[in-house]
Image (tube, rainbow, N blue to C red; front, side, top):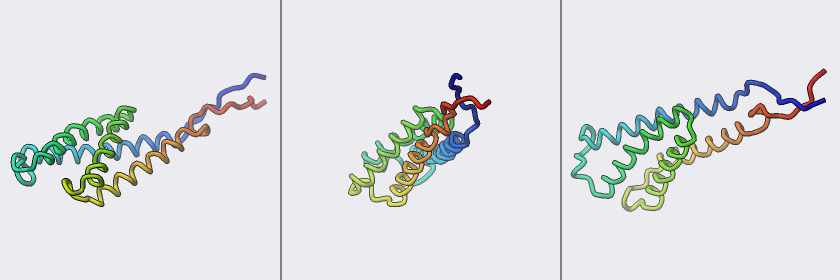
Length: 139
């Protein structure tokens, strides 16, 4: 009696995909907010910002929009770009708070979203959710 793969439609990958898509919406809006600062729609003019803030604004304007596209598609590179953005912003606000300020709400947001992602990714990767459980066929 050969072993067969269990075929099922698990819920965890769908939940993970919609979690990534909700993050994508947030990151797209945040990227557009950075772009609006660059073109002068919001806040003081980009040219009046200190150089370190200009660099951070351009960096996040580019990377957050790219990450949002990857997150929406559920691509691995989108998750990598998102984590790169989140860790960079954590380092900015925790390691260089004298330059960038200590935005505790942003820090808390990134810690919570990373923690939830790790939990969902772990749950999605468990055997009962991958559909690759080896079982003996039922007779």
